[in-house]
Length: 249
Ligand SMILES: NC(=O)c1ccc[n+]([C@@H]2O[C@H](COP(=O)([O-])OP(=O)(O)OC[C@H]3O[C@@H](n4cnc5c(N)ncnc54)[C@H](OP(=O)(O)O)[C@@H]3O)[C@@H](O)[C@H]2O)c1
Image 1 (cartoon, rainbow, N blue to C red):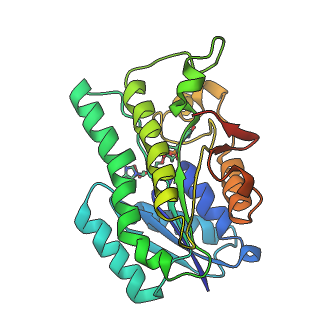
Image 2 (cartoon, rainbow, N blue to C red):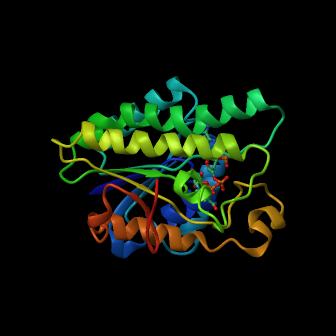
């Protein structure tokens, strides 16, 4: 059996990824991790309700800001499955308050330190797989090239966008550093951006979820993950991968 583990799997992009991976034809057992067990259970119920998950769905408590929770989750996967084929570091936040210090601390703890610690804790499980992937969910808003480009649609700022974008720029480095570090192993390291899609990242009102109607369907982001796992984007291995190409750093 082939095991895929998604952090922050109960909502938005992570949920869409879990749902697509859980399609029977893909043959994957999906491990849905989230910080709130009841939300993860609801996500699993929803996936089963659309007739998916025949190859197995497992709920896992994992708060990426809590080292004990990360270690416990990795131990559970080791005991139950012995190895992991795909780790998807998806959990992320984009707070706009209550103050600058809190915004920076919480954003970096979740979006950067979290994935670093999760990857470290699950590495030996990936190394036990025949064809492992370590995938990071980045963001085009991390692109210094794009925010300095005249006319770019990223030339706007909002409260907290400096922290969010900087955390994702640093995540680009973490992913490429891990790729270098693991170049002599079987682990393929990738970073991709889901694009602007409907989720709770910007808030839970309909206006915020849909970014005023501009956000797309996260199923498209999930299909990008499937194409990466299918080897279709191997030529973009050392870039920030987006649906229609690559995004400049
Ligand atoms: N949506 C977009 O347009 C967009 C664009 C570019 C990149 N992204 C990236 O896509 C990823 C997923 O975000 P999303 O848009 O799907 O937002 P979302 O709907 O808010 O989902 C974020 C997920 O992360 C979880 N999470 C937050 N803090 C966590 C923690 N400490 N430990 C474990 N899980 C935690 C959330 O759990 P709770 O439900 O418990 O809060 C939720 O499941 C993020 O990395 C984000 O930066 C999104």
